Length: 289
Image (tube, rainbow, N blue to C red; front, side):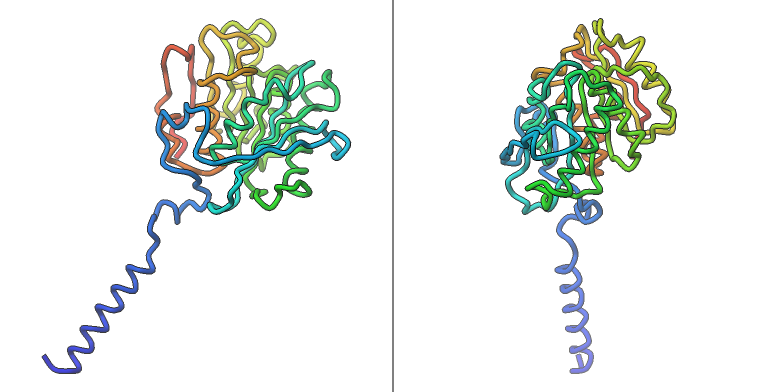
């Protein structure tokens, strides 16, 4: 082989090696910069804690406006990047303690979470929706954890009137990435203007916000073109989401991961429709991807 041909061959090899070295180690991760945490499994989304170490901070009522203070739960390391954030409201006459179990459970999966107290325990859903949005604005603008949050990736949750509040917040701010009303109550039944990916969780034996008068009509009123799901807890009461509940947690995590983090690895838990003894009914507009 002549020297010029040898040099040309070596140059081609060097170029090929350089191209391989420059290629990302994980094409999926490069395609989705919001992916956080290891590949999920049934055991990881049912676990009481995820892969992220977390801390918490108290937010005094006197330190904020627009909502009644609360507690922030957040991953301690930002080595993986910034995180999406979720605000969660309690229901009528309740305080944040009724939804506090969700704080560490969701945060350890890779979210910044704030469970809020409302301005009044008697606040109606529309007010709770405004307070959820005020809490998100506080998180992303002035809170001590604001640099850990991607302000374009936000979601809302709530129980009972707080669940109705999450519907109100979604209509007010359609840029939200996800909403999860938990046994929601709201006087408005038509949510055809809601465009936020929404999972409604109802309870079969709910006598406060019966699924036939609340959760089901809320779901059916949303456009079929929306990303939406309806999960009805089997043999469960209105208060089911106010204490540790594996079914509520696993599908909430999957929904938030899928739509706040755009993480299609969680699609498997949502589509095809899940079933089991804990689920009375499940409806969905699969596929989401």
